[in-house]
Image (cartoon, rainbow, N blue to C red):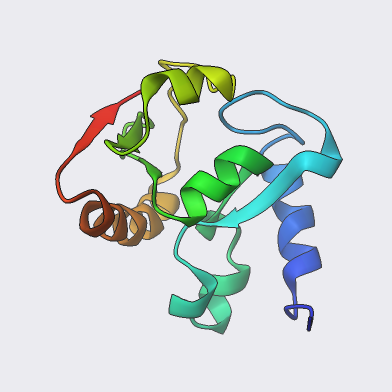
Length: 129
């Protein structure tokens, strides 16, 4: 597998931006924290791919859900979950309910793209967590 050019620096920038902590769970174990692109790498240009505002630091399980558009975040920081996911699964993954993430305005531009893909995936069947 080829490494994505700049991915290491992107991760370092996100670790600093998010204070070495998962934005949702508060996990601080570096080995399980993922530098998640909000607007997908494949849909981003070279500048967007390395822009710290196009990223969120997430624990691995949340990163997987986010990457597959099974969760997203509203502009107010509320987590939105695809209706295919059961609430007890979120509990089993120890994903806390009611967390609000503070996003800077520059990040909300990227969130718009993620939210649009999430809506396609969920077909309007979703709930706030």
